[in-house]
Image 1 (tube, rainbow, N blue to C red):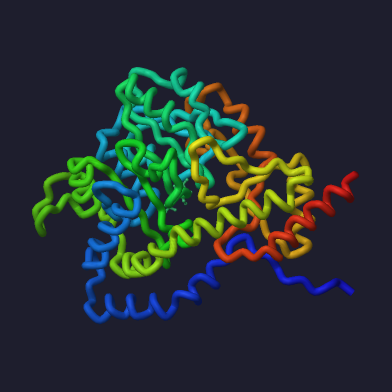
Image 2: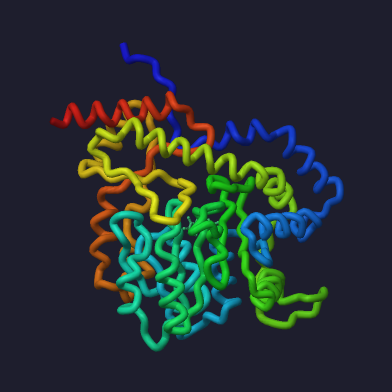
Length: 374
Ligand SMILES: Cc1ncc(COP(=O)(O)O)c(C=O)c1O
C-alpha cells in the first residue's frame, strides 16, 4: 500500500489569502460601497506607500508588470528604431514589453552563478541604436548593478529595471527598482507582493518620467477629455490597490520567511547532488524562486512529482527560441550559457509559510533519488 503523504505544492496562495480574509474583505467592501473602481483613493495611497517602501520619489501603478516595463521604456524615451539590451533567459514579458515600444531587444548571455546579465558581454551588444538596458533581477536577486550603471553612464543609456520578481530585494542596502531610471514591478498573484488579479507599478526618482507615465497609463489625460498624447488604458484597479494596501505591511516578513526557507534548503541539501543558488556580494535575495540545477532534471522532477512534490522550470527555453525572437541579435551568438542552463534548472517549492517539515520532505526525496541513481 502506498504511504499517505501530504502534497508539497510549488506555491500555496490559499493559506495566505485565508489568513488575510478578515482584513481584505472590509477593504474590498469599502471600495464597492463607494463604487470608486478606477483611480480611487486606494490607488493614490498605495502608490505613496509603495514609493516609500522602495525609498523612491514616485510610484505610478499600472495594469500589469508587462505594462510597467513597456510604459517605463516609453517614458524614458525608447521607441521605434531603438535597441534595448536585456538578458536571454527572462520571462517573455520582458522582451514583449521592449517590442511593444517599437524597439528591438538584443539578448545578452548570463552568469552561470546567479543567472543574471553577464556584465562582461554587455558592451559587445551595444550599437549606435542602443537606447537602454533592462536588467532583470531574476528569481529575486539583483546582479552586478554597479557595472551596469557604469556601462550605462559611459554609453549614455537608460536603465529600466525589471524588478517583477524582486519586491523588497536590495543591492548594497538600496532597494531594487531604485538603481536606474525606472524600476518595474508585477503584482501577479504569485509574486512576492501579489494582488487578486493582474497589477503592476513603476517607481522612479524623476518627476518628468512619473508625469509621462501618468499620461501614458490613462489616455494621455491630465484632465478629463483632454488628450495630450497617444496613450493607453493601463490602470491598477482600485480593488487591487485595496488588496495590495493590506498586503504591503507583510511583505518584509514574507520575504524573511522565504529567506529562512532558502537557508533550510541549503542546510538539508548541502550533501546532495543539486547545485544550489548563491547570494551575490551586497545582494539581499528575496527568493521569489529557489532555482537549482541537476544533470538529470527530467528524471528527478518526475520522481518528485510521483511523490506529490511539485516543481517548476523558470524558464525551459532561452528567449531567442521564442517564435518572435528567432532572428534576434544575441551576444554571444545563440546564448550558450542560457541554452545550457535551460536544460538543467528547476525550481523547488517556495512560498512564505512553507514548513520545515515540507522542506525536509523535499530534501529527503531528492537525496533518495541521488542514492537510487548510483
Ligand atoms: C521577470 C518578469 N518580467 C515581467 C513579468 C510580467 O509581469 P506581469 O505578468 O504582471 O505582466 C514577469 C511576471 O510574470 C516576470 O517574472
